[in-house]
Length: 102
Image 1 (cartoon, rainbow, N blue to C red):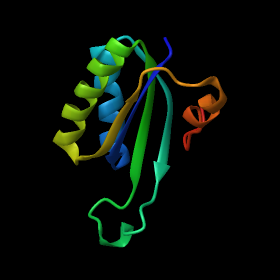
Image 2: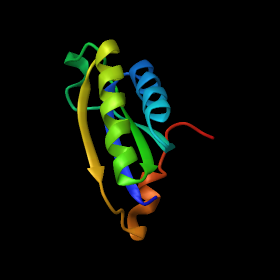
Image 3: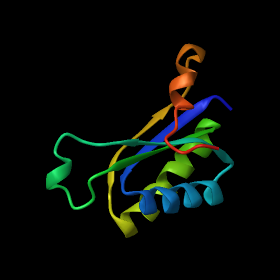
């Protein structure tokens, strides 16, 4: 359970919907939800990007990211997505960085 998936969507609502879809579609855990304000935020309809960071097996992450993308696109859109097959322990603290307190 060392793979990481990150999907960055426009807006918190889309992020929550994406996270929910990911967890229902595959055996993954939400490691964190973090935010990013792009440089051109004033020109965007939704001025904040939210990253949903997931952990699980590589096959579960692949399924989860596809489900999250489909769900987020129904609300706003996806800015980026990535899958890291094996996260290095030295950067694991970055995956756990969150704008939402647990």
